[in-house]
Image (cartoon, rainbow, N blue to C red; front, top):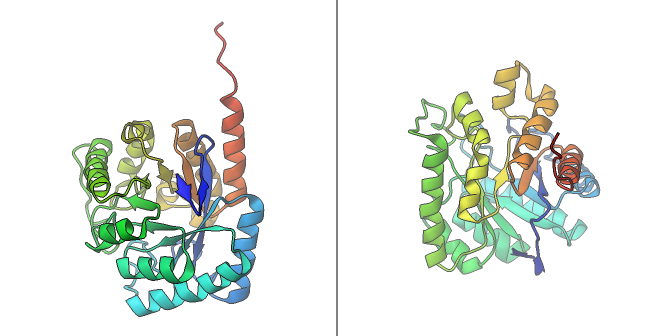
Length: 279
């Protein structure tokens, strides 16, 4: 995949570090809303080995407050000014479902990738905008909207249903000339606890679409609800699920904790060097 003028090889999985510049994200809300803390967080992620930095200014946790277009644009613009001056070589992804925001971030701040939690459903101009901008597009599955997604989500078969939706959308994007697509099954977005673990168990099936697959389970409630812990206590569960996802062949881990994700990748890649012996 071509990103920022360079060929990104997914033969070894990559790490996307999360930078939430919102006051109300489920885990790190309010932690990175001032210049010094933003710069410190990004520097830490880069030094720990993050391949991409994903910047979000609109919390998508269940029931989160609506953020106006102007406020989202202001938060992202201020952050991108810092990142482009301090980390010009970093590959920056913008987490937004608004096509207008996506265009401004790419054209004015040279954002390298768009990460859309709604796969184009919340802004019908997004696909055309991505085709016009010709940048990589992360397409995440969500049933409903952030405000409604956890109100009794239903599937006939969560893996097959999401695969069918992705297949249809990949075809639409291809017709528009968009091939650089990354798929995110959307853990926690319109899924029950069982849906999430059924989806994790079937991750290898997404390889049939021949697109890179990204997984974001970092400190989410699918860990906390099962283990009875808070997001602050969910690092161990996150590492376990990230390792399972890597063993199932995913290409990108989207995480709050970069160092631990990089280490998980190194261990799983080491295991791949050896063919299991028969006794």
